[in-house]
Length: 395
Image (cartoon, rainbow, N blue to C red; front, side):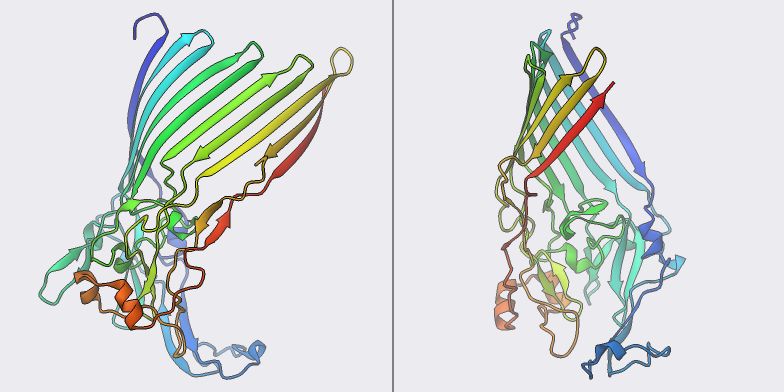
């Protein structure tokens, strides 16, 4: 910026398009055919069930539901005006060299999904799940519900916006040591977690996640589209990396990480027997998981063996203090199974009533829908301490 090589200003902007991943044609686009049948269990001898070549549909027990068609193998389900998966990204940064060994930097990044490709679901008169391969909120996938008077509820567009500001200090490797310290503020907001399903414990099913499998799942109890902090958002993150070379051929490295917890969003099952998961109080309804921290240590000792040979021993310790921070909580409030006369039901409500606004807590109490005993309990934890030993002969 000043012509002295000590200030640098940079920026970029780009549009990126993505191809459709293979799980979409294999699954909802008809690469396989999925029918489900439900029967009463009339005998405890389970290993003799479904042995007949005529099963299904001629199976043991009484048919209580089905066949349910979970795959619609037809190109008729393809949105004719399908738009490609599109992402925009912009960045702006400035760096300043304090001395030949130290520098400061400040960077801003913005990313946004403009159009996503997903299987957008609905039910036909027989209860079969029918999918349109399209862009949520566009074309055939632009209506979530239509009332009897002809008014309609728009289907929410897929939204995933990321904004981040990072400040960092860097001391280059000199005088036997180096140091990097950074602070990152970020916000991940929307209703679409991307090609990996953050709302589903990180399930990787690109283009066929549950986000848009049924319109009800994209709304809260007020009948409003659910937009908010996405499940992998960590607002504050501090990182430090320090390396020191001792004069007796020992190198030591420390990596420290401290970050905000991730949002906890409760959900309940609606409309049995389908039991659609609904984030009825919106995203981040129950705060965050605890603050996450971890310290890692690396030691490396060199032993010279003659003029051109060296023996190198190393130890890499991840999670040095063996911390056990909870990184997830069980978010499903209601106990709900799929089907059957004795199955525990989800919350019964008409879709007209749902989109006009309901009181979920009152419905749970009135219908005596049991709560899952694991609700809001810690369900996943930080990886335990891991130690890796290394031996290397260099010649």
